[in-house]
Length: 109
Length: 113
Image 1 (cartoon, rainbow over the protein chains, first blue to last red):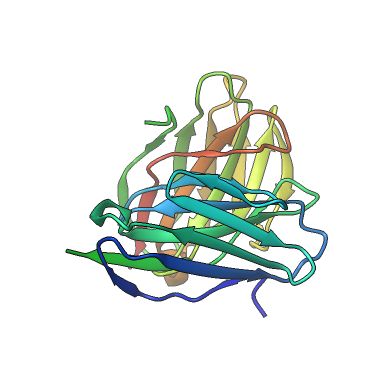
Image 2: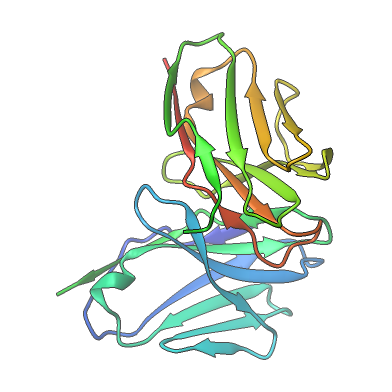
């Protein structure tokens, strides 16, 4: 079983739609959680951290459920520019970031 | 832009050869982490360097080695290249050993034939 699992997609949605991605992680000792965004043939960039209480940044909302070892990302009012791969990332007690395989989102006009 | 640079951008090598990839960290950052990203997969942690010492290693064989220099730039060396080593190699710089955020460079795309 992979340490961080994501549905690879692709998720094809129309502009303006709401889309949600899920991620599960296997290490219950994981301490920090993030969503990164990666555009085609580019480097990953931090989208947002994920906190236990849930957090929102504009159209993006992240949730963490430690009991179920589950992380989610909700994107509201999707834009064409949101098309990218979204990487779920977990950091344990050490210094290593563990990435999921990514979920590909394609927003269509 | 993150201020993290990598060279070269692309590289083609033959199986069995050796390769050195380079990374310059963002100003003020003393930690460099290296990742391998195969096509269609997420990045996999190779190792991290903090103040010129290896400070954590992922599940990669010893033929993957590295260095960090006093200016905190870093090299990744891979010996005895295999076809499966073909991937995008990313370095990420950060401050401290338990960084909240890592800033990635644009990567080096290595093709092994």
